[in-house]
Image (cartoon, rainbow, N blue to C red):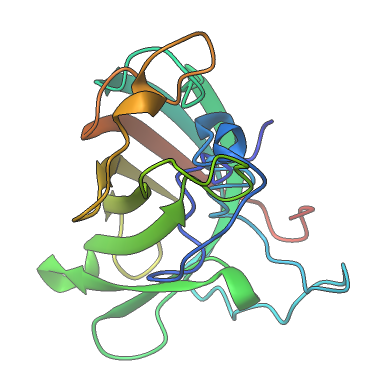
Length: 208
């Protein structure tokens, strides 16, 4: 899985619950920045490409390197390194768009446009697909925050950023049984993972 934002860190649809097939498929980090975390190019529900942003700041090849994680071992396994492509756009004012089409997220630029922050939150039902009707409810909120800096606010060629992914059970949830056993989700909740991102601008005409 080489498209970071398939980190079941999924920065794609903020504040929207996702029901996946069984808790074993929920919030899987290897898919985070890939299926769970699509910071990359979007596709429509019919598999066709969605409309792209203007990418006024360019398209970037990004390498993400794991810095730390407190979730322990389990289904939320975090790859040491991930790669993906992302479009950056500055539509108006201090806004910054990360991604393309249906996958785009809107953040904010500061420091004269050199710095940027993008945030997304997603709630996942970790019991989705379970046949155990007696299990207590377990919904997990994932919060993704990217804080970065462009090498040039007007004509950037690269950027560096930190990606933090926080996982926490929402109020009235009891997820303790998912923290034990060979098929556990993680060893601790709440927990977080941090990645260091390095983006290099693609040459004009390069494949997305």
